[in-house]
Length: 350
Image (cartoon, rainbow, N blue to C red; front, side, top):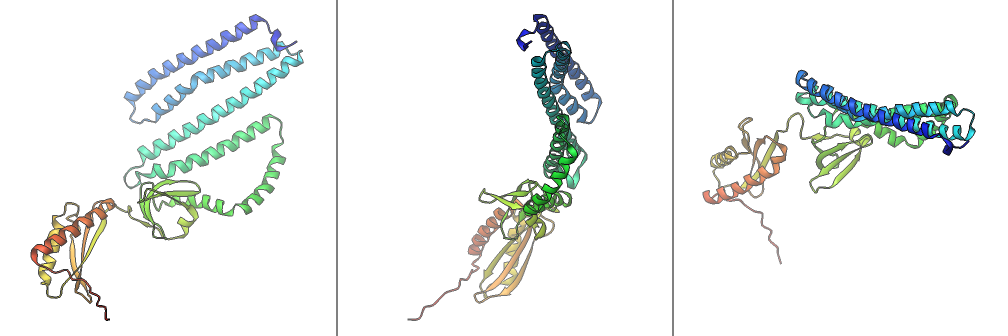
């Protein structure tokens, strides 16, 4: 007997069962939608709403898969004597099994993503409010890797593959792979260390040992991506970040020094210069009142007296803008007050 010889009655019954499963799925979605609306008004947390939303999206497909299993099992029972039909049904059943397992695995990974994001977004506050941006991608990748490995083992066991001998072979092979991929493994371990130690977070501005500065765009399992001031991405292996000194301008706060150095002629009034510079710093809208700005005479150079003006901005991103504005105001103020800014002159002898 061939698969084309199936009775019309059996085809009709299968279609009715699938339609019934689809209707049950839609009805379940409607019920879950009502439950979600009621829970939203009674509970403070959003986790239950997100879980119900996920289940609502999956429920119809789950009913259809259950109906498919029932149909295949019933057909296998009825046509147990037909080799051709059983062979086709066996392939269909295995395909349905793999699809169901993958569908469940995707659902579990989505549930994990929802739970960990909820916990890090709503339960972690204060200094750790950016924790989700750094930790979530790494945890998701690790959990996804473990889930894929688990699903692979289940599928192989379902098809009769000896898992024990396979694991032994993988153990020998993994040793060779580990030796060949030492740097990659070191970078992955360093990524986990960065996730736990958190020397910087996504969005922080850091300075690399090479002197390059930029904002952390993405923290991956193998490397970290940094956006520099030229709007180019710098990809840095995690192992290098763990081994070297990194300057984090965003931690423990985003407050940063604005420093302006200016040289004036030796015939200038020191107190007048200091008073003028302090007034310019105090009048700048980007300079904080506390800590107070300060001006110091720090050196005597070949051309004049070197003053260093120090103030603090509330945001490190305003540093260069603030220093530029202060330099422009200093030049204008010195010209108005007749304070000379000396320059070094080079005399060439012929």
